[in-house]
Length: 51
Image 1 (spheres, rainbow, N blue to C red):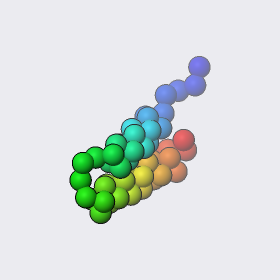
Image 2: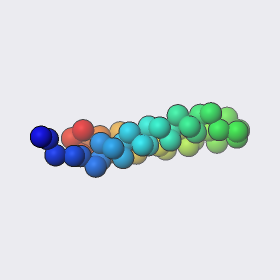
Image 3: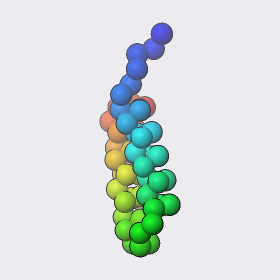
Image 4: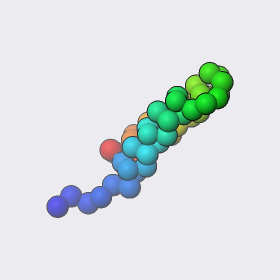
């Protein structure tokens, strides 16, 4: 059984938060900024954790 990779789960959580940011009730600039920040964290976790 393969070991659990916490960075993989955190990356998935950040992807979910990024999608939620797009549907939030805020200005377009705020939504895009939050989306980009969460996706950057998800990409960093994927590359660092080998996910």
